[in-house]
Amino acid sequence: MENHARSDDDVVSLTRSWTKSSASGPGDCVEVAFAADQTVYVRDSKDSAGPALAFTGRSWATFLTTMGGFVGDSDLGT
Image (cartoon, rainbow, N blue to C red; front, side, top):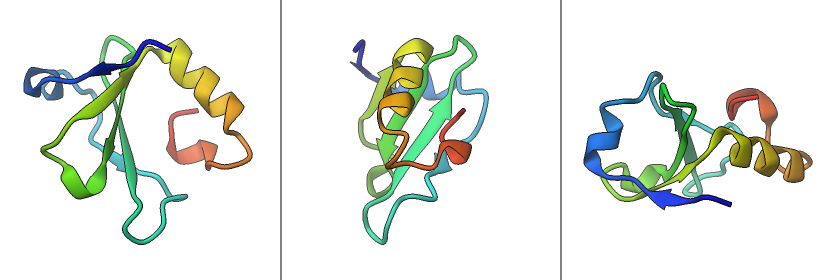
């Protein structure tokens, strides 16, 4: 998988706001955001100024397919 830490400059290129997964529990929240270049960013909602992982669209689709039984597809970009 092609994962990269994001820099603060990457936030500017996001085409959507951060979306919290409905599968997240209290205190265990994951948020995703999508960039114009098809990069998907994932971060811990408790640390919104902290690091985020960056996935290619293809890597993100593979992750969702693999984890399909564990995450809600509708709020994570499929």
